[in-house]
Image 1 (tube, rainbow, N blue to C red):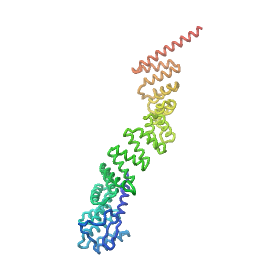
Image 2 (cartoon, one colour):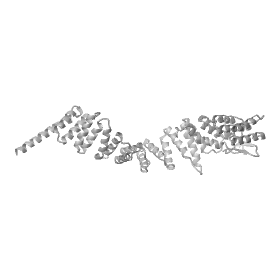
Image 3 (cartoon, rainbow, N blue to C red):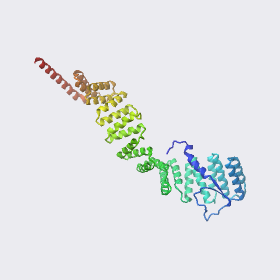
Image 4 (cartoon, rainbow, N blue to C red):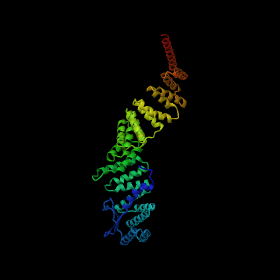
Length: 441
């Protein structure tokens, strides 16, 4: 549910519903003025005395209605003030005058005054049940429009006590009120009731926004299992990217990694991934689930398409993916780019090791020296060992021994470095002996 919208934008649909509820129908011949569109049966309780509108009141309300239709609000109020002075008004007459007063306030966008007028109506005794319930529901909608959510719940529950076969909409509206009050458990309970009623209706079903609020409620309650059920239903009825992406995240929380990857892959294949974080996440999931080659290809394509930024972090990830796919040759270019953008020498050491694996000894030497010069290495001794090995392969024996001597200053590399120095000395001696023998022959 979008809680970032302005109060005005959030309540506009509710206000429109209130306007519809305010349409009045004159009961010609019966002497009554009753809100139209009531969900309550027209017959009153047998035990309640039905009160009638006297002719003078009826005529005054009719005149006020005409003024209102002409947007003559001052004229409508004058008509209402005139009949308000009639002696011995019964509850029904007072209620109709107050109701119409609330209508005038509403039309002038004075919602708080309208709420006050309708509250006075429902406080009157012995009102016809239909009129009372219509007014109660109007109060529910006005309370929502003015963000008085607790009042909306009070009047809504009072309305439900006598409502005949209510549909799902009232339960949804009260679920919204509970959600706004951060009463998430009550909100999902009302939503499930609304959905249950709507799903039984052969002419339709629960609306998308109902499930959207249910989704938000279960998310707030951290009920991941129920959230999964809601999202799985939503993607079948409204297969939007937003719902698929959320479902994938829920699968991840539940440890269902294969399903998580499958959902994201479907989104990707449909060409719906247009954000860097989505593509990077999918690539990482492939790397974690034994598909580093796919991960590397997705990252590479994202960079080529300009969706994934060519920064140190992403180049490093791309290089890791190619290394995991055992393709050191492809891992080198992104690793070189990551190292160039890095503030320390650690990535240059990784680059040197990759060059060593590919017998690219000159490039290995250059990378190792760049790493040592850049600094920030966790193990400078390791960098010197790699440098010494590459220099040895290039038959630069004295520089190689210098690198190994630098490495053996760290106890963790002393033994290895000494073995290399001894090996180089033997190799130099062997080559010298071979040279002398050839010279004598």
